[in-house]
Image (cartoon, rainbow over all chains, first blue to last red):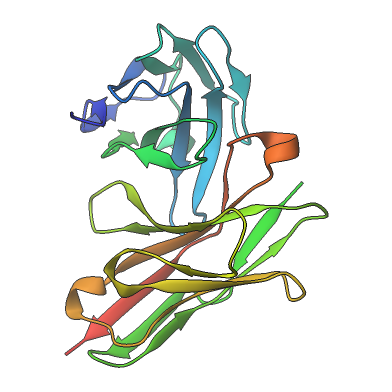
Length: 112
Length: 115
């Protein structure tokens, strides 16, 4: 039982490049989330998926897209990376009845 | 919409001293409350949660928190800290009626335990 896994762990991009962050969970959770963490700002929700087949914007969705590929996988895409997207990105999953979110180890992204 | 304020960005303490990390929230409706811990270069893990029932909630690693509805607070406490408690702590709130299981996080409190 690996919990929530994220790939890659580290990534450096040039401005304008694109990339996809991958997330998978093996806990049969319905809901999945993408957050970004910046110093002094806590975690901010980018997008979430309440269940397979649905996605919704969170607090800071601009510059990102997501895909809920199936119940296990939820990917985050940066189409044209900007230095302001330099951050640590966390994926999480939860069941709706416990409200407890389980987090992956994070992806540290630097955009130069 | 709900919001969370963690009143201290950094809390330095000595080993075996008690500690309190303060969290206030604002919401016009009933909320669920959480404390998460993040060790360096790791993801977040749940310390404890309040959904309903007793206002004193016990969590892992000897931490506890008290839900105070009149003061809209959910402060985290530990009577005697260890070096290994050094980490960043996040308070979070969820409004199940309007936002389901989505969480709003505070800015975090860095707890540093010194020998």
